Length: 185
Picture 1: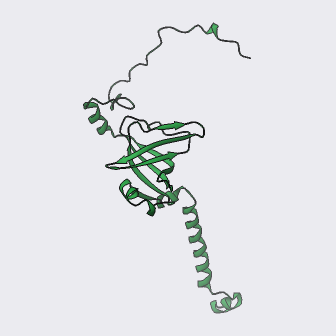
Picture 2 (picture 1 turned 135 degrees about the vertical axis):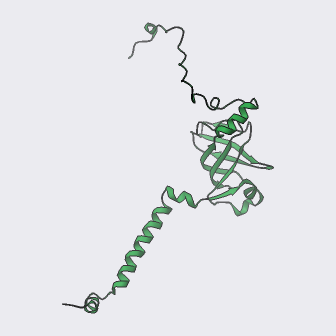
Picture 3 (picture 1 turned 90 degrees about the vertical axis):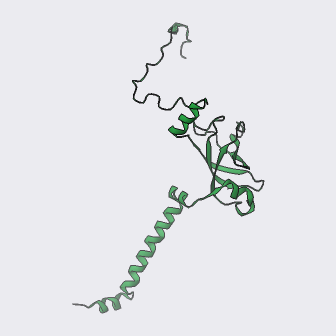
């Protein structure tokens, strides 16, 4: 039988070094996967609008998130190139945002005072170039307060259908004559 010291001498590498090497490779792999996956989003800084607008140079070319209220009437859409532009604000601070994609979430609407979180980078001209736009819908309780105050609801009144039997969908009064459609080619 060979002892542990004889086996170590025959391979030339101590056992503790082999274990350390394996653990180092595994740890490096985990870090690589975290930084190169969606889990890396957890490492994106979240800043207030006041922090960003009061010292923009400290935030340029860094990936971060910022939240603000969508300014009423600021949404603009351009088709070529496809892009959304809007302004978020918080108190006396405001920041223009560019979102160079064609599709935004359904709840991204003007006129409801929604809170919007954007993720991206602050450009040299102090415009925020977003790669993600996340509108925060008002809670059921906020919606009830707004409804009581007489505001219009973005998706219908809260609590519709809760506890009540669902209402029947409205049927058209007449069925169109399908014979008038052109023949398929």
